[in-house]
Structures are given as C-alpha cells and as structure tokens.
Length: 265
Image (cartoon, rainbow, N blue to C red; front, side, top):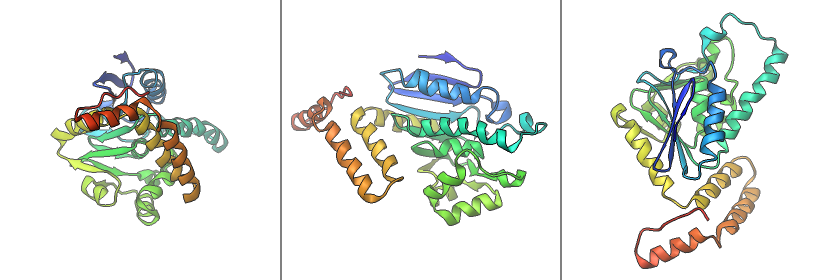
C-alpha cells in the first residue's frame, strides 16, 4: 500500500508501516507539509489498514533522521507570543496522538535527531540508533526552548539532571552516550539499522494485537498517574482481553506446540 506525499514516503510490508521522512536536502527538517503528511500517514492510512500492526519511522539519506524545524523557512518571520501559543497546540496534539497511536511505533535514527526531530523520536515507543547518529535538543542556541514536548518527555525518559544538561547546553550527544543514559534502546551499525528496525517491527507485528495494544496503553497510562491508578488500569486491560480469541489461540498453540495464528479478536 503506497500513497504519494510531499515530505515523506509511506509503504506497508509484512504488517509494518514504514514512514520515511523525505527532505534529505534539508536533513529531513520539519517544514513544508510534513506535519500534515505525518498526520495523514498515521491516521488516514496506518490506522485504517487492518494489516498494520507496527510502524517504523526513519529518515531518507544517511545524514539525518530529522534535524528539527526548518530554520531557513522560519528565519525571516516574526510570530507574536499569543499566536504561537495557540498554533503550537496543533503540534502538541499531533505528537500526543502519535504517542498514543494504537500500535507500537519504532524510530530508526539514521543520523542527526535534533530539536523537533528528537521530539518526534521521543513520542515513539522504541528508539534504535545508527552508531553515527547524534541526538539532542539544541534550541537554546537559537534563544528558544524545545516546544514540541521536549521539556516534558525527555526528563521523564532519562531523568531531570541529564535532561536539563542537554537542554541547557544545547549540545548533541553520540548514539553510544544516548544508549548509556537510556535515550535509545539499541545502537547498531548504519548498514544494519533498517534491517534491525524492520526485524523488530515484524516480530512485534506477529504478536497478538489486542495484548500489544493494551500493554502500550497500560504503560502510557501508568507513567502519568499514581501506582494505584496504574494498577487499576492494568486490571481493566487484562480483563478486556482475558476472553479474547487470541488468548484462546495462544493457549491452544502452546499446548499443541505450534506457531499461533493471531487475528486481533
């Protein structure tokens, strides 16, 4: 399944939707129709395709996953604070919807992931990085701050101290350091990145969709509420799938020592 976009390339294979940011001449910077294209790819295509059970997002070329906002597009403009405050809600809403997307989303960081590019990666469930990738939130160097969720998601992922260091200095870190502080899940050689990401995505896509969906929702909910409320949602999630066909199929396959055939029912 394919559709033509101005700023990305979308395709589906083996239950995995691949979204490739496609502005390599601008290091895949966020500009043009990219936000609208991302919304359409996730919520018009992937969400409505029953074959999709996992999403991988990466960048075109070998220089960047996404270098953040397209500064060349924005440099000459002046935006009033009140107008920015209102308009930025749309970006927050889009990133939040991607974060809560029904299926797991894997970011394959094939190069620089900076500013808004890292903020896209932060709303993904899993991040894999090429060994030559560099990551950070350098907005402070332009006299602004990470405003697409970076000030909120990064501290929750790696802790306040390290997050503040990265945002105060605006420096980019190596993929290996990102792995050490828990910013990425794995680091692989550049030539192996997409194979690793797609293999992981296919493995996830082969799992029972309802269980995966509720695991994601339970974890996301639990990180935003207290332990007791999180445990209550966990019980609810477990109850929702305890009598599912997939659960029964999983049990039968285990007993019969065969590969299960999950349908998401």
